[in-house]
Image (cartoon, rainbow, N blue to C red; front, side, top):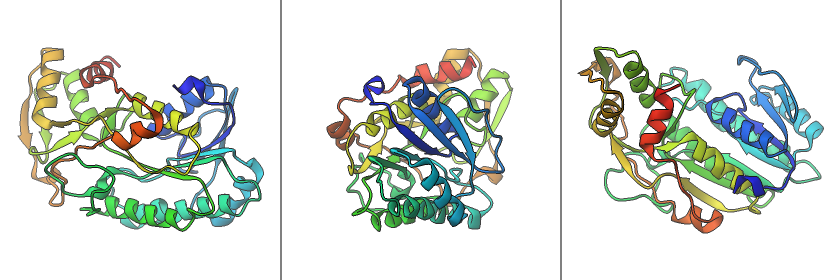
Amino acid sequence: MAEDVSVSRVLVSGASGFTGSYVTSRLIAAGHEVHGLIHAAEHTPPSGAGWMAHIVDLGDRQAVHRIVEALAPERVIHLAAIAFVAHGDVDGMYRTNILGTRNLLEALANRDGQPGSVLLASSANIYGNRTEGVLDEAAPAAPANDYGVSKLAMEYVARLYEGRLPITVVRPFNYTGRGQSLDFLVPKIVDHVRRRAPFIELGNLDVARDFSDVRGVADIYMRLLDVPGPNGTLNICSGRARSLTEILEMLEEISGHRMEVRVNPAYVRANEVKSLCGSRARLEAVVGSVSMPPFEETLRWMLEA
C-alpha cells in the first residue's frame, strides 16, 4: 500500500495539474519531501510542510538541468503534459510531451547520483482505435490523434535512456474525479446533472472507455515508487469499458435527473477512438492486487462535490 513507501525526496512534474494534485497530496501525507515542477503559466499553490513548488518550463533545457542538479531527486514522477486530446495548439503539445520529457530525462541521466525510480506517464491513447478485446501492453501501437502520437514518441524518447535510468512507463486509460476540467467527458456530464440542466450537447455517442478513479491511479503511482525499476510498460486501468449510455444511465439513477442528449456536430471528432479497455495483469504482477473504487462511487463523489 502507499503507506509502505519509504520516505524520500520526490520530484513531481505537473504537480499542480489534475493528477499531480492528488499524487502530491498522497506523497505529502506519506511524509515524503515533495518538490513540484509548475509551469510559469499555471497558478502556483503555496509551499508548505513537506512541499515546495518550483516554476520551471520543461522546454527550457538549461533551466531543467539546473533544477534537477539543485534538487537531486531520489524518485521522479513525470506527469507534466498537455493531456486534452482536442487541444488546439498542436505544436505546443508536441513540444511539451516530447521535448519536455527529453529535457527532464537528459538532466536526470547526466547527474552523478541516479534516482531510484523514474515513473513516466504515457497514455492508452497510443493504442488508437481498438474496438475488440482487452488490450495488454503487447498490443501494437496505432495512435489515432496527435495526443496519442506525442505520447508514443515520448515512449521512444524514454527508450534512449533505458540503460541509464530506472524507467517505468505507465499507460493510464481514462480516469476521472473531482477537479478534472469540464473539457473532459465525465466532468462535463456530472456538471450538467448537478445543475439539473434540461439537456446536454455531446459529440460521438458510440464510444466506450475503461474508466478509473483518480484516487486509485494516484495510489498505484505511489506503490510503483517503492518497486525498484525499471519495470517496462504497465497499463493503468479498471479492466472494464463503459459506454457513454451506461454512464448517463448511472448518473440518472444516482441523481433522479434525466437530460435530453443532443449531438452537436462541433463536438464530433473524425479521429475519435471508439473503444478502449485494458488488461492490468502485468501491473498486478509488479505491485500486487489492484482495486479501483467502484465507478458508481466515483460518480457519486464527483456529483456531491
